Structures are given as C-alpha cells and as structure tokens.
Image (cartoon, rainbow, N blue to C red):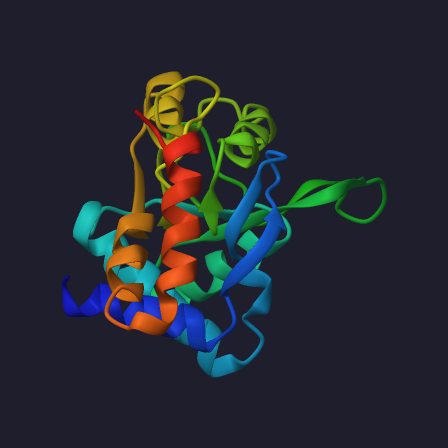
Length: 217
C-alpha cells in the first residue's frame, strides 16, 4: 500500500471519522463500518483533510481550475478546506455550497458562496458514496445551474458496493452522469491496513462478509 494511503486511513481512524460497529447508511443498508466527516472538529484536522483532497485533485485533475461544491452539511467544510489547500499550492478556486432550506430573504436562493456561471465546471467534494443517493441529490440541485457542467466528484472512501444494480455505485454514477468519481482510498485499502494487526480480525471478517453480499460485481 502507498504510504499516503496508510497515512490517510490512520488519520481517519485517529480523528474518529472511520468507525467500526453497526450502522445504517443513507441508502438504508446496515453496514459494519462508517465514514463520518462530521467527526472532524478541530482546525488541524480539517486542514489535514483538505490537504488530502487537494493531493487527490492535483493527481487526477491537475492544475485545471474548477468550482468546488460541498453538499450540505458535511461537504461544506470539505469544500472550504480543499479550496484553502489548493490555494496554498498555487491554485485559487472558488467554492460554494447549498442550503437545506431555500432562503426567502436577504440575497435569497439555495446556494451560498460563488455561484457558477454558464460554461464553468464544478467538482463535487463529498465524504463517501454508498449507493449513490447523495450524489443524485446533489445533481438534482446543481441541475438548476444552466450551462454548468459537473467535471468530477471526489470522496474519501470508495466503499466498492453495489449501487442500484450489481455494478459499483461509483461506476453507476459515472455512467449515469458522465463524469469520473475519484477516492483517496477504497475499502480494500482499509482491509489491507486492518490486516496488519491481528486485533482487527473481527472487523476484517465483518467487512468481508458484508462485501460478499453488498460488494459490486
């Protein structure tokens, strides 16, 4: 495993973002591990997370400028931290996020921050994709921006799970909307990391059993 992947998984675990147990995903699936960006709660942690997203952005997109979109609520801090990290590395990009409820006073509207213009490209930054539910919700919101194209999505972890069919959720999103979905690590990286310590045997077994049923074909 590449060193940055191990470093990222260690970071997720130490920050309480990566947890093991019994959880229910947004898709309704019962899952043995959970990725919760809401556990990032210090300046140092959010700065570190942004650095990992920036690294992934430069690796996959290069110096190409796009507008970062962070879906409310967890995506908001990710978009801000990623934008800061990118700017520190010479790429100053705008960012925006949505409100859960449309504001009917002041400046109004559903978006906060920079509003992309026709011809501009947007990159969605999320915490994780399970069945693709959250991304489809984001695409419905972004569809109101005329002439704006979503160029890519970045997530922390590819769970390598089925989407609405037998294919992986990320593959389904790519095929449905026509843009790539990138992750810093995937669930098999997490398994490899866990297998380095025997005390993680139970969690490894539970994740593998879950993937045997819900893993993408």
